[in-house]
Image (tube, rainbow, N blue to C red; front, side, top):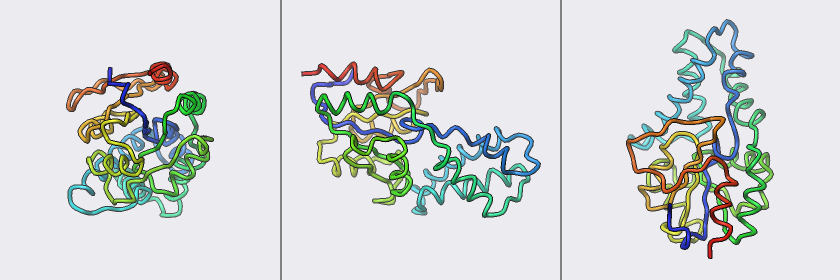
Length: 236
C-alpha cells in the first residue's frame, strides 16, 4: 500500500481509465469496405499508436495525439491491404474518440466521494486539449476535476518522466504527494512510479489486463474507483 497519509492530490489517466474507447473494431467493420478481421486491425492500430508515441519521444518527432492516432490507423489499415480515403479515416477517429466513448459507471460517484474527502483531482493524459475537453464534458466531471493536463503542453508523451513532473507542477503539489491512477496496460503506472508518484493500477474485472513484470509494481491495485475512494475517504 502507498503512504496514503501524504496524498492530497490524485491524478487520473483518461482513456481506458475514465472512459472506454473499445468501439474500434465495430467502427472499422461498419466503415471499411471488405474488411474481414476488424479486431486484428484494431489491435494493430492500438499497438502502433503506443509505439509511435514512444518513438516520437525518442527521436524528437512530436505530433499531437489525435494526429498520431491518424498515422497509426493508416498504418494498421494498409497492413491488411485496405487503402482507405482520408475522410473515412477521419470519420473512424471521430467516432471512436469522440462520438462513441462511454463513461465507466463508477467515475462520477467515486470522484464526488474523493472531492468531498478533500482531495484535488486532475487528469494527466496524452490526449490533445480538445480531446480532453470533450472527454471531461462527456464524463460529466468538469466540476470535479481541477484541470485536464495534456502532453501537448510540453510536447512529450507518457511514459517519459517529464509529463508527470509537468503535471505535478501544474497541480501545485510535490510529486511524491500525488497518487496517479491508471487503467489499461502498465506503461502509465511505470512512468508515474519512475517520476516519483504513488500509483494505483485500476484493473477492472470486465477488462482484466494481465500483470506485467517489466517495471516497478504499482503501489496498489484496485478493481474500481469506489475501491480507491474506500481506501482514501477515512485517511486522517
